Image (tube, rainbow, N blue to C red):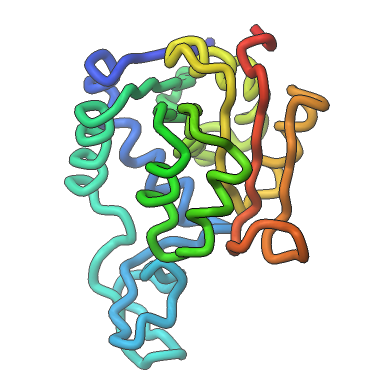
Length: 222
């Protein structure tokens, strides 16, 4: 049994109780390894998040994390803030065990995306506008799977749900960033030449540690 659905910010609220643990589980494993909040005053962990379990000793700073990387209240507040501040759409898949994956996208101007999602990488401000222009795009903000409930095939419907989110937000072009190779591979698999993958930290590439993906005419996949 499976259940794949699209949601507005209002209709997705009953799923928060499943979206939150799916998000926490997804980003605690490789390649993200975001298990706890870094407690090092020198902030040597990328993004302030650590792979060390709560209560365990970090060999780098000699301290023990005390808080999870993504706390339930924080995630709920963030989900609510997205829906209240901009055009936002959700997608989720469920099986007999529960919610197996979720995705959230929102529409914004490229400069707004750069300001919000790349505040720590000022080089991205001009770069992202040069690549995406000045018209609104769909920012595929998060795609996350709970592999404890479904170990494989969570991106099987990638093309369909990206096209559906773009349709909900009435915008043809989609962009996102990722460190997950599967997220770049499925873009080419499902969108072909309409998907452009720009690698990170290469000459002429993205001035960031994450790859950047652009999908043109995304709604045509439906």
